[in-house]
Amino acid sequence: MRRRGRARAGTGGSLPRFLALYGLLYAAYGSLSPILPNFLESRGLSAREIAAVLAGALLVRLVAGPLAGRLADRRGTGRGILAAAAALSGLAAFAHLPAHGFPVLLAVGLVYALATAPLAPLADALALLAAQDGRRFQYGWVRGAGAAAFIGAASLAGWLIGGSGLGAAVSAGGILFLAAALAAGLVPPGEPAEAGAKEGLWQGFATLLRSGPYRRILLVAALVVGAHAMHDAFTMILWREAGIGAGLAGLLWSEAVAAEVLVFLLVGAPLVRRLGPGSCLALAAAAGALRWAVTAETAALPAIAGIQILHGLTFALLHLACLDLIERNVAPGLRATALTLYGSLGVGLATALLTLASGSLYATFGQRAFWAMAALSLLALPISLSLRAQR
Image (cartoon, rainbow, N blue to C red; front, side, top):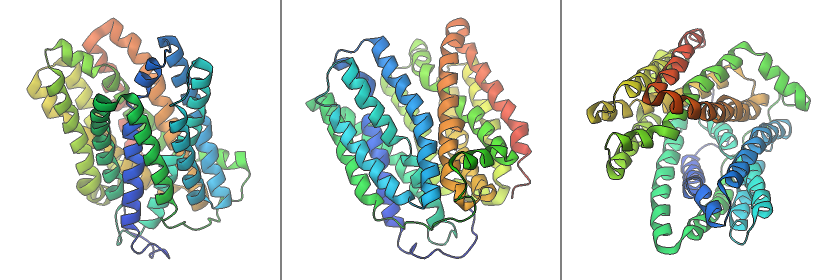
């Protein structure tokens, strides 16, 4: 992110600690997130019951994340809440192993959702504070390490499942979350913020949502990231129908992840500094419109391979630009609240709603339904351009 302000006390040498935190945290996500529906199915839950567990978890995350962020801002305890939430996430992961039956698995799933909801936003708040002057490290470095850890852990989880069953991947995720809790205790604690920190619980949310720039950041994130919903739900089906095998499809997904990691590690921060965050949001929106328009029109392998690299812009660059704008427009005492709202409303809720809509759209229009996602990305373009003054 951009370089400003003097180095915070205690940030020296913090890069290895944040790399460990993000690596462990996202490796835990990678071990568990892809396989939880299969694990629930292996415990005898029906499709309707699995959907109920996942929907209940989503609702819990939408509430728990922002509340944890607000608590972290008001009490200046972001690191402590992060460590406690990571530890509870590990325990909740292990609690899946002896659980059987819908009521018990629902309860365990809701506790797991409660614990995991604030993890990434609170880690981001601490990393942004430590990296603020840009001379020690860039936020993108640690976030890129997290993305690489996610895909690596997901691959290793597949190997574990093949040898020892789904429970082995769940156990690995639990261990990684507990290790992340220890790593969280080693990162700099940040500073108790003043502006906005002592506002009432609901006042803090109201202050944020009254901010025009912040509302526009949420809307752009909802449109551009939300447009990925149809891709995540139906691209593998589309590719299979086009004759693309599972192995080649995996390589295409890996290409997109590699582009994401590249932008986080190397390309993103210089682009944000050079163009400004508003222009980078516009670039991400335009890339999204192109990506989904091509997907709507062809499943030819050269075209698909060509557009996978756009994921680095439509996700990673957008995320970096949004966080840069949040730093510029949100008082330090509301920073964790802003990041958890961004994750819950700007990304989580939008993705959930658009995933539901994608089912009907794809059932009706098939491949051409991706034009709707291109339209959403285009809608974000003028909103992004309105944020260009925020340099």
